Image (cartoon, rainbow, N blue to C red; front, side, top):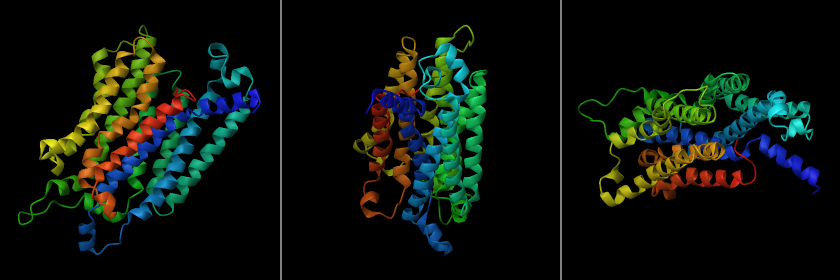
Length: 357
């Protein structure tokens, strides 16, 4: 491949921030699995409602992954198109200022990705209008962030909202009216005391909301940390507050399953898988924060890949409650934790090809 063509391809990968795509997929999948773990098949059978199958939900998930991937790429290409004037002054080596790609071509890519994302949300919206509404809100947040990010630190809010909406979209991929009815159903009476696992199912929407708050704080924390270290004269934020934001998912993603004592926490030897879900996030994030002051881009790249490890925090609880109907998976549900771990490694590998920021 000629050098110019190769460079233009690398430019597209860099503009697309493809190293962050695994984190998008991880966010969507964790929302999906949280919703599926809140489906009480016995409860639905008692109501004689329509059957929910994991196979059918996975079809929705695949379409949703295509839509959210396109939405993410829409944001990155739109961002570079919007920043062309800034880059001509401060980053002349980038694709548009260097002349390797024209602004109109990059904007054209952004429009194509926005169209693909909208088409995916419309397709799913035929059976679930909520996915269409949330998908359009996601695209709106992307546009708002693009307009704000160079002029206000408050741009971290729409950026964080994009991540929370990925959780919600994944959750809605399993949505049926009976799932919401189940979530709001009254707790069993005294003759049928609630079990810890049924408590988790009845509070699935609350769990989703708090996890969304957790990932919003994480994104806000890493964004503010980068700004604080690179421009301390413009942003006076206590370092302890930044650490609190970044570690907040430790509470929001774990309280619900630690509080309800899943069966595999009864024996100390069975708690090892739980520690394996917590330690990667803790160790990776501490290491990233220690290199923050010396090399900001590396911190941001590590923290972005760490979004997959944020999702990993929830997997012990998901494994304790999920019933997929697949015998091999239901017998060892903690294997699901390999999804965010694999995507985390994939994100790091992609960072060797194109930068994450």
